[in-house]
Amino acid sequence: TNRYMFYLYRVSGVPASKLVMGVSFYGRTFRLNGPGTTTVNYPVDTVNYPGLYYNTQNDDICNRGTFYSENSYMYDIGLPAGADQRFALYKDIVNMLNGGYGWTEWFHSSAMAPGMYFNDGQVIGGWARELWISYDNPASLTAKTDFIIDKGMGGVMFWEISHDDANRTLV
Image 1 (cartoon, one colour):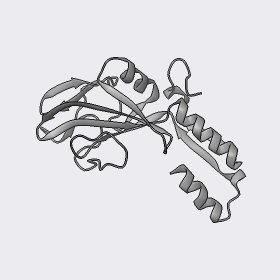
Image 2 (image 1 turned 90 degrees about the vertical axis):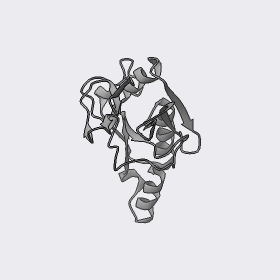
Image 3 (image 1 turned 30 degrees about the vertical axis):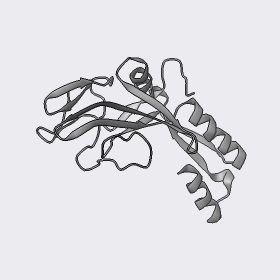
Image 4 (image 1 turned 180 degrees about the vertical axis):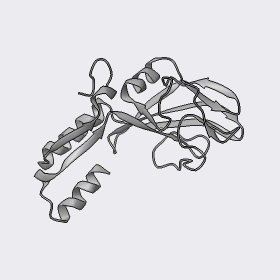
């Protein structure tokens, strides 16, 4: 997407030095729209599933802290209480990956982007518990930084520093 937008602006006559790439210190959450998938370019359920805390029993967003809810079954997936169900901060992503919550990380080599998924193989209420988060990590930020330098772009901006982990891994 960044590469496409860069070239779109360039063919429109915008100098590379006037373009700044934005990166996020958070991830976007999705529920995969089908069983057995954990990769990019797979349909996601955006109608019935706005984020990690969707409760199919009463069609309402749950305010249950670190738990993912399906038909009254509660699963601790590692997010802190009160978190926005559509996003996961990078510091929480690190905790989710390292805290034994069942998340698996992978890296898409052509997109130069990481992702992580939660799939414990169970189907509840007709839905597989397959959650997916896309985000930036040090490897993807390095690739984006290399692209910015190579193309002579004006720089990079990020949102936001408080979302980084305690080690300031992304900064």
